[in-house]
Length: 97
Image (cartoon, one colour):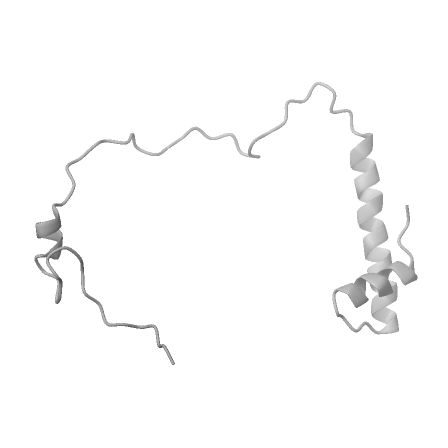
């Protein structure tokens, strides 16, 4: 299915773009080239090809998860400029008018 100038004008309208006549001609040609390339890709035999999850097959290089002790609430609040003993106190940032 080929893209026509009318299609490009319609797509531009949906995208709220104002195109000049030479741009319409250019985009019509470019979109048709893309569709031609997609048709070529559809001709490729992929019958016995496994789908990829990622184009580069790497193994996980991250470290193992290790359970470590957590910082206690008292230690976390020890250097806080303001707290109520249970939570950090911060300035109010929501205005109510």
